[in-house]
Length: 312
Image (cartoon, rainbow, N blue to C red; front, side, top):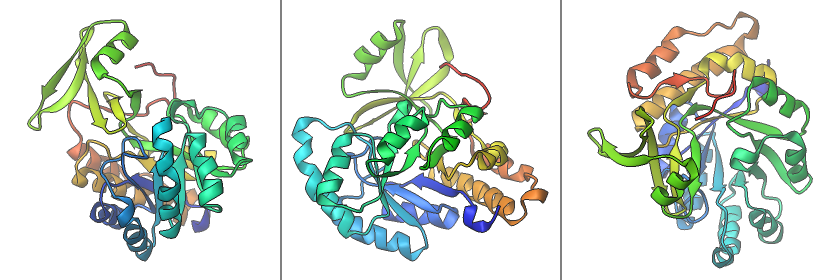
């Protein structure tokens, strides 16, 4: 594999300063934005700061993507044109979207702005990706539930770039409405919300599985229940590269900057070594050990769905 074919290492940031730290740790691109338009954004970079943010990221040699993966209500649609004009004026590298309303507004108010299709859990087949590709998308963000064979098959079936999450927690439930009522009805079994740990973080704990903690993340877009464990695919990078993955996403939510920087440095080292000499590539155990030293002991690192079907 040539250096030109090296997969992008992507993460999200909640401030310009945090984005710069993550780039220096190894990120090639950073997803930024604000909760008005994007779900599970780790902080707010308002429209008034987009031009500065994009400029500073570009100065470090990184790309700036704008997160607009929210599902919009009718009363929110009037905000889209001005925001997209600001995104285009800031010279952002792409917009991540799930709602067709974003695509339609890009066509009218920010033509030429690249689009990354992110349909959350429903990005499972290449035909759907190509549907959006014919309408302007250049990248598809794959569902976290796909295994290695399905990822490779997806890539073979589409002309779009594909993005796969390689590290961190995943969203397993989202509601615009009250978390307790909605999620408990969704589960159909008893559960309760508890605060644990020194930071008094909020977790959902099911009565049937008291040893597992599901982090609860809330922002302006609603309430999000996250996975009890973390994906860690650093050992599987050769398979993902062979499958044709173009962008590898590190989810930074509910993690410290130190943890996220360590993860990015490890994946950066692995990808660089693989690109330099694919035939001789061997993973350095220190890359994973550095991550484990900062890993929450109550959250396991695993391969997620990559090698098997997994049900939370």
